[in-house]
Image (cartoon, rainbow, N blue to C red; front, side, top):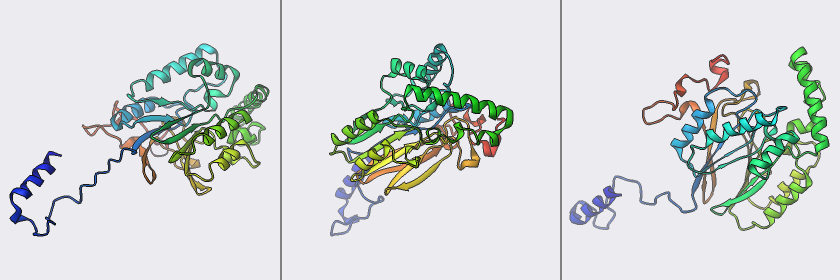
Length: 330
């Protein structure tokens, strides 16, 4: 700003150096700064479980501290979870909480199947964090956080039984046999479940927030991939007359599709197990800049976010951010 003031003063003091019509040459393009009060940025981190690779997520948090978005939100699978005891759940959540605590802005949690698939895991979540689905507004933008593990207690028991059996088959007979199991072919495993109460909650939230300029949805599993109409279809229908963007995780390979004329973005990993056979499977964070004309979405690979010394924080130069390129033994 001081340089611009100096240049303006100089032009006034030495008018003979500029054009007579006031169109003086200047060493800048214009003075319309990209600083609208409605502009903001937030970051999204992807799955870090399914066999978390050490060091990756801690490095990502250090990098987010360099980027300093207004807040960070996830797409679920924040802990390994699964069929474990209460004290293990508590310890895993405490570890995640400690790792995100260094970020100066808010961190918004989204639950995945590792986080919310059992009665016990949901009980622990409720005690620590309250609701598994919720919404909030920020700078006239609506954020919807969904729970794709919203099954009945009876269904959770049956899914757990099918999963345990499928894992035994995987361990004894390999992935091809696993692919033929009941669990591997469950619609819930791929696209999750959203119950009627949750649908009604979001329909009400959408109805009460008609004045927002954009809506973002965050969910772990791609709920729109069911072959039959589900409660999520009602949420999409309620948003059909307004602009929105959807982010999900779960597959742990990056994807993008245009559905209903809107962007549906699937994040890959931020430390979780990678599956390069499914597509781009590399550690990254997503930076979203909200503007007056809509969001700009940039995917930042962890291997390229460096500090002022030119190094990846927390000795990240020794880490493997893409198993496909550097091998899963690093």
